[in-house]
Amino acid sequence: MQLVGGATALVLSGEEEPDRPVFTMNCVLLHPRTRGTVCLPSPDPQAPPLIDPRYFDVPADTSAMVAGLRAVMGIAHCAPFAPYLARSYLPAGDDLNRPDAMSDAALEEHVRRWSATAYHPVGTCAMGSGHDAVVDPDLEVYGVERLRVVDASVMPTVTSGNTNAPTIMIAEKAAELIAERPC
Image 1 (cartoon, rainbow, N blue to C red):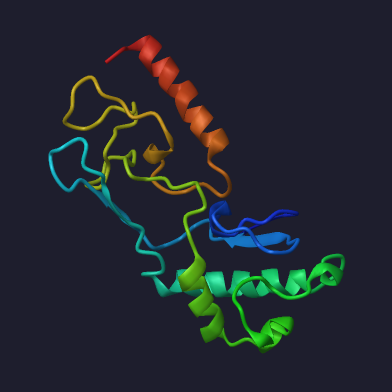
Image 2 (image 1 turned 30 degrees about the vertical axis):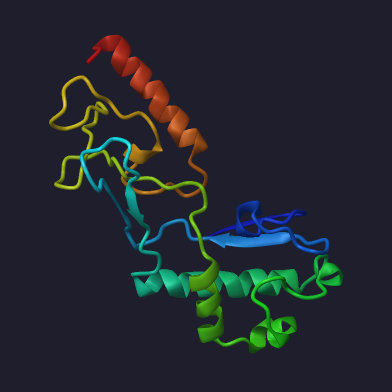
């Protein structure tokens, strides 16, 4: 679990602006067991892909997020944050001033309603040798000549943290591979 916070409003990726000063504290599940899908609906390259993240298909992911949310709420009610916490912004309810009194079911409902991708999806073109692999260790797409994928999508699983540095490493390795043997 990664806790992400700051003196800003990160509500719905900035789509909603709170009516008062807030701070944000999120929990991010670093190693979800649930796997979503990305499919092409047709041969038309202009057709948008069908994306189904399938959030929380694996119950362990839901349990981990509930525990993370409970931890975040507990931290928010401690110094130095507590004096600035008039009430939690989400979810709305009278019992938020006592996070220990909220049921797991209420927290699960919140998690299912408000969770979203944390800007670091990976694996849609996973590298490997199994039946789910899209690219080989040289980042070449199986079955397609002269095409490589060089981005976070080749990571078979998400890293323990932000994907920026690993993606730079993939790009640097790709540059070496291309210099040695262009497609």
